[in-house]
Image (cartoon, rainbow, N blue to C red):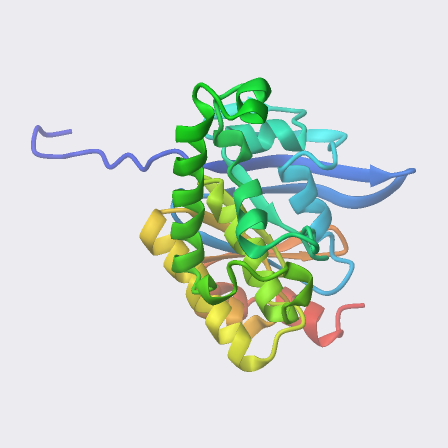
Length: 265
């Protein structure tokens, strides 16, 4: 190699799954799944109902423990991680079924996403002494920034349970974003939304990715939405990976087309 030649070394992926398999009582839900997610990209997991998408997301953040394979996150290999540890390492997620505190305000729900950022003791927090007052101000300021970013400031003092479904989904996204994650896992963030709400949520996801550099892995059934916002698409069918690559490449994959049109089975 001449002195003028250079070697282009791409940074390691933020998330790398290697031969992940998951079973429930002997029934395989996920079989030998491997793929990598680059830092700063939006990666979509798609596939027909029952393909194993949510199960795989649950493996990534430690809700489920895979029986085989390993996960490398932020250059650290781990076989078993619990959700709390995943959150401490920089993962945040939303759920297919809303997991909000319906009797609390929007602001208070978003503030719960800041819990891991606190350094004061529970005694300091209970008595309002030491580091707690200054920390409370900082957590509130950060929460308010997220609320403004996602354009839900008009409802900041509203009880979450009184809001329309589409707004509740945005509040759940705000709570996850308040944790300042490296990796944001979104399980059907647009489920139950109309076309206008989907367009707005798509814009927010893209803005989060661009403004904060947050890596996003999302599950979404609307293929039009996925192809419009994702740089990387992974396709599952019956717990196996059948597609992995840029949207245009995946869209043209005969196996993916067959799975979606139902001609494969």
